[in-house]
Image (cartoon, rainbow, N blue to C red; front, side):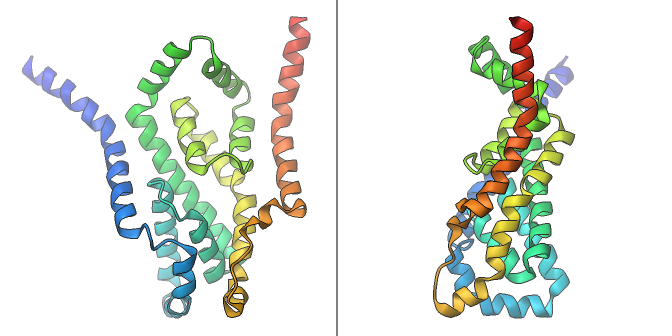
Length: 247
C-alpha cells in the first residue's frame, strides 16, 4: 500500500520535472546571458567572433546551434540577435539552415516539456471552463485544419514565437505536425534576418544599425503573407463548405 502511494506521489514530480528544468534554465539564462545575446554585444565582439569561427569552424557551428536551441527552449530574449549572428558568421543560406534546425529543436523541447508537464491537465481545465466557447471552437478548427493553423501561427509575424511554441502543447497537437510546421514555417522569416545578418560587416563599418523592419517592406512581407493566405485556404474552404451544409 505504501509502495503504491509512494509511486503515485512520485508520478506528478516526474511529469513536472521537464517544466522545472525549463523554468530553472530560463532563470539562470536570464541571469547569466540577459545582456549578452544582443545586437550591441555582436557589434562589440564581431572581430573576436570571426577569429574564433575561422580557427574553430566545426566547433563554432555546434556551439551556435546549441546556444540557439537553448535560447528557444528556455524562451530567452535574444533570438533575433542570434539569427543575425548566424547570417553574419556563416552567410545567408548556411546561417539560415543552422538557425532553422536549432530553432526547431529548441521549440520541440519546450513543446514536449509543456505537454508532458501540464498539457493534459491544462487542456482539461480550460475545456471545462470554456464549455463551448472560444477555446473549443479553436480546438475544433485546429483538429479540422491542424497543419494550416500551425503554419499560420509560424508565418504571421504578429504571433510571438514562444506563444506558437506553447499553445499547441496545451491543445493536443501531434508531435509530427508540430515539428513539420515549425521547421517549414520559420524558414521565410529566418532567411530574411539571416540575409540582414550577412550584410552586418558593411553596417558595422559605417557605424550604423541594421534596418530590422525590412521584413515589413512590401516586397518581403508580400510573399510571406501570400504563403499565409495559401496556408489559410483550406480553413476558408472548410468554413464555406460548413455554411453551405448548414443552410
